Amino acid sequence: MKLVRKIKYIGVVLLSITAFTACDDFIEEDIFSDITSENFIDEQTADQLIVGVYSSLRPIYSDYTFKFFGTDLFASQSEATSISSENDYTDINSGMGLSVWANNYSVIGKANTAINRYQTQINFSESNFGFRDYGIAQAKALRALAYFNLVQQYGGVVIETEEATTIRTDYERSSEEATYAQIILDLEEAIPTLLDAPETGRFSKRAAQHLLAEVYLTRAYTSFGTTADYSTAANLAETAIGGYDIRSQTFAEVFDIDNQVNDEILFAVQWGSGGLDTDKQNNKHAAFMNQVFEYPGITRIGTPYGTVGFAAMPTPFFYSLFADNDTREEATIHRALFADVEEVFDADGVDGPLSEVLIQPGDTVIYYPKNALDMDELTDKLNRYYVYQPDQYLFGLPENIDGTNFQYSTNILRTNFPIFKKFDDNDFNENTDGARDTFVFRVSGTHLIAAEAHLGAGNTAGSLSHLNIVRERATGIANEYTSVTIDDILDERAVELAGEANRWAVLKRTGKLQERIGLYNPQVIDHGAFDSSIHLLRPIPANELQLSDGSMVQNPGY
Figure 1 (tube, helix red, strand yellow):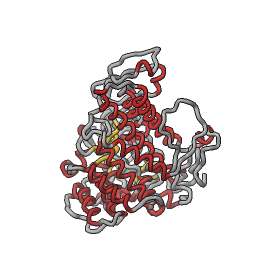
Figure 2 (cartoon, one colour):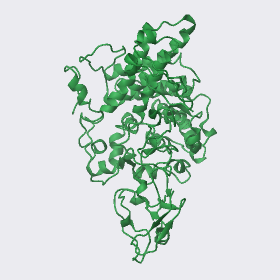
Figure 3 (tube, one colour):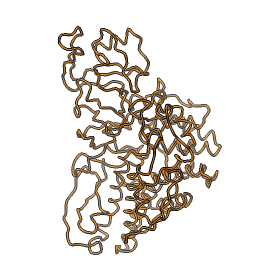
Figure 4 (tube, one colour):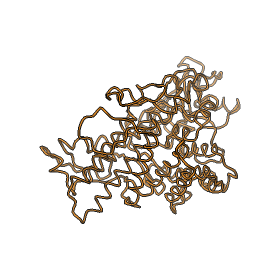
């Protein structure tokens, strides 16, 4: 299930550039001291440098800053009037987002180190030249991934492709166009050498083709992009899809916790259940949920739910996108939560007129119907568990229904909504640390890139073909879409890739960010301050500006 490598703990120089990745057969420790890179790293140990680059992806994909808040699908778990800078754009400033910048540059720095050592310091025998070239290709692909993460958020960034050997303060940002050119160069150099079917956890040729397709697609929308970029993106996406048919397994099977390595996953960040503490620090299961342990009969770790690790919630618009026959809904969200311990619930105490309810493990504790219940149904169910109607998912306190055992006023949580299910883990701690892998690229997402690229290129038939394949798996209906717009693709991405793909970056790319948050994000509707002349780029972190000698330029408006 995991990338299995023999990873050694190294001291002195290499400690800062070697890290760890999860494995089922955990790590054999060898301790080294009083060594230097020159007398330790050789062709037998060189792969540790590449593993270190992979492990540096973990902080990137367990940090949700600038990915989901402030979009049409996710908002703050609070009143519509509440202020949250990242979500409502009221005060986005250079004190925010340092982790996004630093984590991606950590990958870039480690990739640069690996490439330099592979090219100039490690004496590879001729028989291992292929291994050398493969290591360099992986490092370049991962460097491209990090630069793509950055350019979508900040525009042009500092392009550094050499190993850092001295402290500098004179870094300058390159243009956005030059940044895209570097990403494309890295990927085009890497793809021929990457493997079609590498060991689990490594970047494959198809993963790199998927990434390059999205890079060309995103560039196509820019002032320096061309119509040819759409066609190139479509061709690359179709090559990445290959012969795999996503309809060979259901959406629920793709996210089955016991099926984390499956043919739909082009690339995933690896975690695990044993070995080092850092192998079990993923918080994906803790995203898009509330503190469900506050409900009667539910504990922190006796259920698949966990605790909040990222306090965003889906918007009402997100829930509305699931058609009645869309099987993804059941696999994506929990419409009912179940007890894991016995508890006696009494809304008004032993002397009150309401009945005690004995909650047993497995009993429903709270229910979120897809469609509103009538008063008779609601009253009946409120005698056995909490019920929140579709128009009650946002912050608020519904009126009590007289005589029912579950009074809304007894629930201390004021924001109640169907929490995410697709990322459920079966091994996590009270502090949100979990072991589930994080999917980065899936073939269904590649189909949606192809659909968008074909649409941009004016090939409606090609776009419909890919869009309908994704839809057919969800609903069982072939060729359900007979026409296609960019909004159709965005809606399909919403239900297929929710919580996976960077929604903010996708809305920015398609020119739909301002429109959609103004329609569907509750806080933005109430008091949002989005300004397209400012907020389509993120602020360069203040720390970076302060450490430079004035050569680092801030984005406009910050």
